[in-house]
Image (cartoon, rainbow, N blue to C red; front, side, top):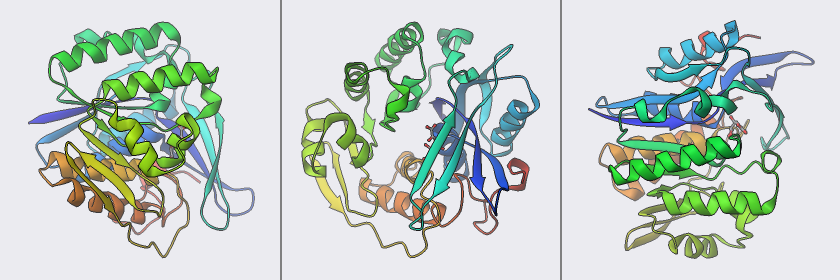
Length: 309
Ligand SMILES: O=C(O)C(=O)C[C@H](O)[C@H](O)CO
């Protein structure tokens, strides 16, 4: 049995239904990675969430949703007074999303203050994103980074997705410092090209791949929407043509669902190109549906237990 610990912020998600009606679900980048990974993971992989919620009914619902999906919530703390953050998705006619957030005082921001990281059994894999880092205050970030460095010495594989949210950072120098640290700490990097463009001003995926190759990262996968995916695994380098997707309703969680399928395949023993193909198949299904989490059978608009109109 091996495990992957996923650190970050799970949220409430509102998507537009008809007219003024909204559909409520649970999401957040790490929530989506955890749920899709739990669905796709080989049976010997345990998926665990490291985060904090409130004690209110919505927070309890989010934990119940994770548990229903088979995600272990033992490393989730309960904040005595704070609640979940919230975001709303609006799509244009091409399915491209725009997010509006209410998250500045969420419980997840205090996760590192509420949890003794050193009491957690050393995970085989640790996943976090640029959002996971951005929501932390300087003291929590320091503690988290020291813990990651210690985990690496113990053999944990560190996995990072850039997921850049400019509004969560105070300044360019702040986010550059943190992204440089994250890329120097990770063994597997799964960034999106749009993020690398904004963070490091990379003009092409090739340039981004060269920039990341200066770090000691074993696997680099650069997602680029419908354009080809550049990858490097040690000395092996290649370009993967992304199959055309005919139905795009909402691109929310495209990258997160890719990450989940990629990791499930790689941890299950597939090659890098096979895992990229699995990632593309998964994200193609997810973007044909509104909101981050599609029903397990890919038919309904979301799992009933986590949706409320
Ligand atoms: O946490 C955020 O900033 C999000 O945007 C959460 C979304 O579920 C996710 O990132 C969508 O891809």
